[in-house]
Length: 144
Image (cartoon, rainbow, N blue to C red; front, side, top):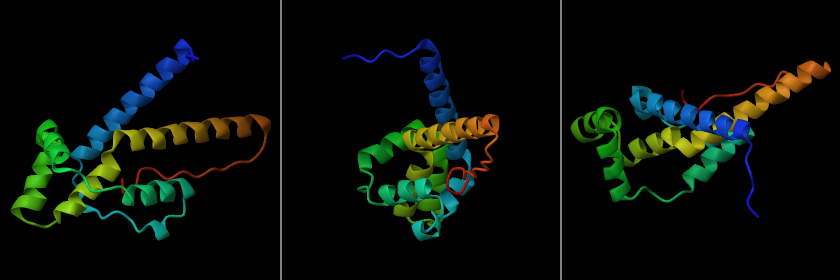
């Protein structure tokens, strides 16, 4: 059975996807994306972020063909930092570079964070309207 999506919801999902793409591009351009180590999962108090990181760390290593596609697609950002910090100065180990990039710049992961934040904001609005106190704190993307 095909599920129909309202035009409003489709537009909202389209906007969210665009925000996710923009955030991924923003993070790709930041030096800290590559230089700052990922946090230790045991140090993360937000269960959602903790789970995302634990699941990510269990994923298999990136394939060389995918690395090449990413470097070719993002010449002025990812490839620039890869060249500077992995190839030239060897300041960052290759596996650490890719781990930091993939966790922070994965558009699907960013979308999950954005969707979660959107739901938190809706919940806060509902709580405020009903007079129930609800000071929900939310952490942003890891390391940014």
